[in-house]
Length: 300
Image (cartoon, rainbow, N blue to C red):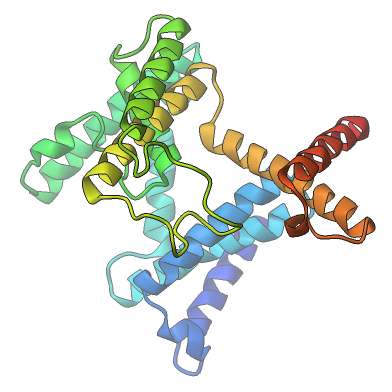
């Protein structure tokens, strides 16, 4: 056995020991449902380490993510459903079957051809699995969008949905069409805002949040229409990001990091001046914001 194989076997054995009688009380109490939140958390921590190019931290974060897989597989084995061997075997088989241009005699010279083959082979595998298990066919699963999980974060789900639709030609021929759609959705949102209590939304009173006491509650029908229009606007932006080959989730996370850094710089300057952001006027806050942007440019 290779050194890698030995290390993997050791990790599997450790996970098994933690779940056995006399093992860790916390680990023994966990179920598939209780572990799910940790899986999501660990996934985002992996992404954060990659975004930060923190190569020292990334191995540890990947290990934490691998732990989630070992945890699920161990619990499944205890219930005699499947084992980590089944997980690895299915993965290896899938990688070989989905890459006939590498392990077979199929030609695929571009990424687009690889993706087309991947989707076609994926659909065939699902049909074959359904036949082998004898499960009744679900018409919903015939949809091209059936493989896109509704449990994904909204931006990721929107990107996958629009990408699937684009694969069958349901796409804007030119990027100008997307900008026109963006303007159209913005106009529709502005039209709905005319029905906002008081005529137009204003900044929340004081320094509170939009749902703070004293704010006029939105009627449910209006809230639903505003959600529709803002959702349409966001979906169009996601399509625009996909069109220019940018991941919308990564783009938004990048902006979040940028805002955090600039806001932190504002807090630092305000502290040096012996004051707090909440004591400053909007004009003073804007001045600090521009200073933080200038410091950012100088640091590049």
